[in-house]
Length: 191
Image (cartoon, rainbow, N blue to C red; front, side, top):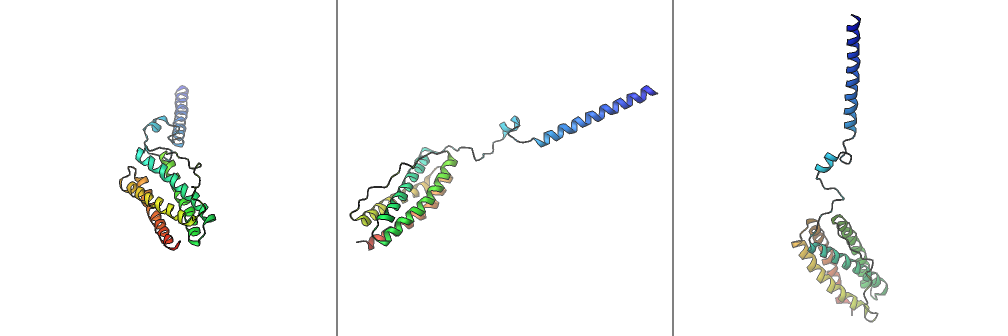
């Protein structure tokens, strides 16, 4: 009888230990379900995260780089117009160019970073507009630049390949059109 009791007792102890090991294994598995530590999950998940780089067409990359450089050029020229402009209109337009294009450039840089596009605008310098008849020359330059930019942004918004780049171009287009209207109005006043 004693050996039967010992056998049942040993069997019970073994079952308790085994069930505890199962519970501990289950708890450990539940605690660590991240994809980073599980190679099986890591290789099968395909949800894009913020570090996933989407390949853009050369057309979209060129647009981003050109828009970034042109926007920074407007900022630099606008700063100069704030200092050298003779009329209040030119100084006001220069300040508006600085504010609006700085904001647009920040948005474009964020978009470019998400898309894996690199461009550097640190080398952009103010254009030599000249001191004589500065206001008229600055306004002519703005008019020409904004007409060209509007055409480029319309083209990208309509036929760009990447939907995010197209959306940014379409969103920025009204700002450029407002700038052109301001410039054309100021050109009528400047003598």
